[in-house]
Every structure is written in structure tokens, then in C-alpha cells.
Image (tube, rainbow, N blue to C red; front, top):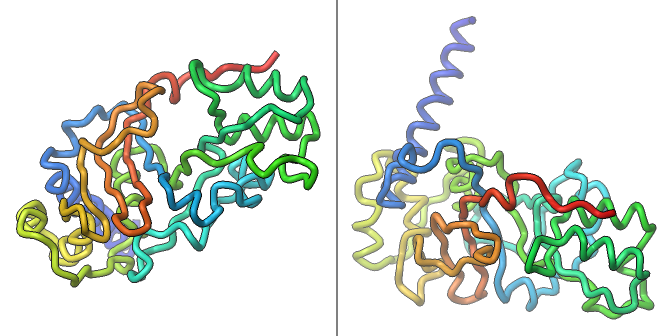
Length: 266
């Protein structure tokens, strides 16, 4: 390993350690105390998907997106429109969709029902993509009603670890250059929550994600946030809600139901 390689490795390790310490402070719980074998994800949902028509944007159904070959950047889905955070990149393959079988071919509708999760009308993007290709169905065809399908929860692209789910949920890119200081006033409880974050730049960035006030740009709800995947036995790690645009960012630990074997169509 060259001196340059050692410096890069040390820098990467220091950055990861800084993130772990900062998120541990934000959650009031050290990250190593969470299940290290668990799978974690950050999801984007809420009324904003409806108000911007993002929930029926045809880009979600692009074959390359549903197979995971590409990620999506949706201009309307932001953490805070006034802040220059790293763009949110979405994983359509691991996002969740609803499909109304009315007006669709019976064999396609039957397979959608078979591959939807138990006690749910929701189907994973990758499974939906396989069925669209197998049955040669176009859910955006003009003769179909507008509400024949919709996006329910968009997964923000991450690597499955808790650290990475928290990173993308708070608009942090791959390094410290992506940090954006939040300079608006937050309440005293929010300031106290992150006072122990050691890295000053990270502390300034996370100020925008720790304010529990219901009128904050992003109101921090912690583990008390609504659980959009409760029916799938997932547990909330932390969440926040955009008070103005009414969107929700939720970090969850995936249940065995979602991270294990999935239903298959006949």
C-alpha cells in the first residue's frame, strides 16, 4: 500500500467513525448497539408524493430502474427545497408499489396478487418489473385509469447498513464535502440533542434534522415516527416529517419478511 493509499484509507475510516458517533448522538443510542446483522433502509413517503404526482411518474416503471441497473433522482422529492443537500437517489427495485387489477389482464393481476406481500396489496418494484416484462403490460397505457398503479414508499438508495441508511436519510453524500450547515434557528431541545456531536461540520449539518418542533422544516420524530411498513413487521429506528410539504423520511430495520425469501408467482 502506498502512502497515498494509507492516507485515503485512514481518511475513510475517520469519516465513518465521525458519522457513527454523530448518528449515535442523534439517536441517543450508539450505533453498535443496534443489530449488526440486521438490514436497514430509508424510505420516502407522505402526501408530497400525491401533491406533486411523483407517485405516478412513469420513471419509476423504467425497466432499468426496476432491475436496479439505474437509480432515480426525482426533482420534486427533496429533503428541504431551500438547502443544497446531496440529491436523493432512489432505488425503484426495492421501493413499494400498489397496483389496482381493474382493467388489467387476468393472468397479470393474478401474478401481482401472488407476489404481493401477505395481508397487503403492495408489491416490490423488482417483482413488479419482472411481471410487467413477462406479461408485456404497460401500466402507463393511455386506456388505463390514472390510478391503476402508484408508488407507496420510495426507498432511498443505500447499501443495507444502518449507517448508510442514516447517511442518505440526512442528505449526506460520500464525504465531508457534501455537508451543508443548517443556519436557521432550531429549538433548545434540538440543539441539546446534537451538542455532543464531535465533528463541528457534521453537527452543523445535522441541526436541520434534529428539531422536534412541529413547525420545523423537518420535524424530528425519532423512533416515535409513524411506521409506513408496520404491516410488514419492520421497526422504526428514526424518522422525520417535512412540516410544510408533508413528506416523511423513515429509517427502519427490515423484518425477515422483507429481507428473506419472497412470494413467487405460479
